[in-house]
Image (cartoon, rainbow, N blue to C red; front, top):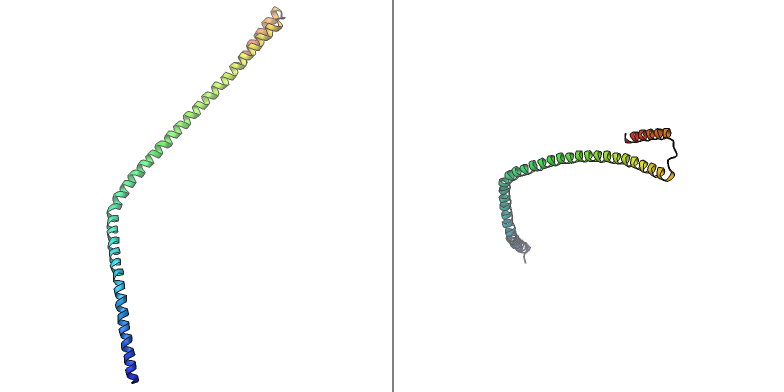
Length: 145
């Protein structure tokens, strides 16, 4: 065989192999290109939908956020009112407790003095009794204040 014929045959076989490979490659890439076109069309539709839906959604979101801010401000005001009222109640309770302490102390001293007088008798003279009475009244007035 002639070397030129062998080379020609090898080149022809390589060209046939190349054509078959290229055909197989193109046929396998065609579905991929079709899918790419479908994906791009879907992205375009999604973009159009987003362009239509975003402005009304943002408007609604602003309205909701305004409502939330109003609720937050109202809640803060109410919490502050409740705190103020709680402080007032605490002050009132403290005043009442202080008054009750004083009154119970006075009542306890009176009870103790009565019991002491009952059990141990009153051994004071009339002048001493008046002084003791004045001293007790003075102590009671001091305890109430």
